[in-house]
Length: 380
Ligand SMILES: NC(=O)CC[C@H](N)C(=O)O
Image 1 (cartoon, helix red, strand yellow):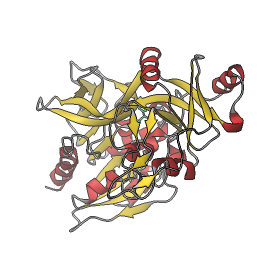
Image 2 (image 1 turned 90 degrees about the horizontal axis):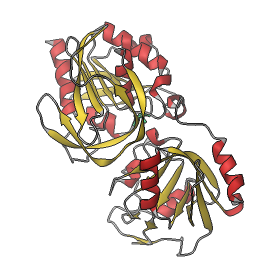
Image 3 (image 1 turned 180 degrees about the vertical axis):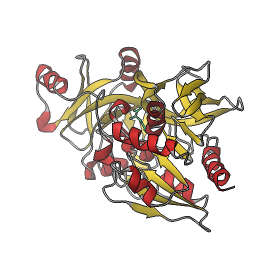
Image 4 (image 1 turned 120 degrees about the vertical axis):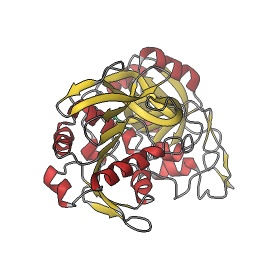
């Protein structure tokens, strides 16, 4: 059991939204100032996975679950080597963390990684505000960073928007590395890292895939230098309309008819590679309880999401693209947003959500098997 160092009354803090609304609470995690896009996540568990998902780079995450931190922090669950969220907003942080795997408290972890947060605010009111007005820029201020609201608001309004942000290179690996297959090696996959979560290569490795994780800047030649049986494009932060380089690499992969799989940002890149547009959702999908229908089977999956943008593809017809026929394979049942794409004439597909995560807990794991089948089909 870890008793948090934070105590009930820490320094005062304020959260200021770009439309001028302010919420007053107490500092949580590091004291100072931070900026980003305010988004909310409805996940009741999995805060370590959320905090360390590189797709959250430059976002301030508001947890709708009121009580966060109960199970502390361990070294096994992170999806990457560091916390990526720009700021963290929690109604009521756990004062005591208790779990057999816990190594330290969440508050300590936020402090040691310099993540500025705020607690003790009405996260329901904040979430409703974001739901009605849409995701927007935000700042959190505590300690020496506190000033009058007008000064803080001006600072928030000077920060960059998420629309137009090209962020993959800031989070992706600089050097290629290999995640070995677990057991007998059956396939080699080149995985273009646009902000990859650690669980993704692991899910492939579990299926006998040796994964060569390549930097976001990898060229088509570098992708084929690993002699891949399949090519994967990962999740990642930022606006997909800026991802021109991965789009052109993916088009080269589609031309060669190599089996292709994309997750989240990778789905948006497939959308663009096929000639569809992408657009910003009002407040996005973030959480682990999002219902998605696989249109080929009619089955509904409970899935993990973290996306603020979506692909603009027709739901009601098969589209003709430069790479043959394409259709929307998955759809979100909350709002009919495109959650997956499937080519009918080439071995390529993608999903907007996170089959590597264990939300359902295993509802979407079949997608990795589908990738394996495509690679088997290519060999047959
Ligand atoms: N998790 C992701 O890959 C997110 C993709 C993209 N940055 C979005 O917000 O929609």
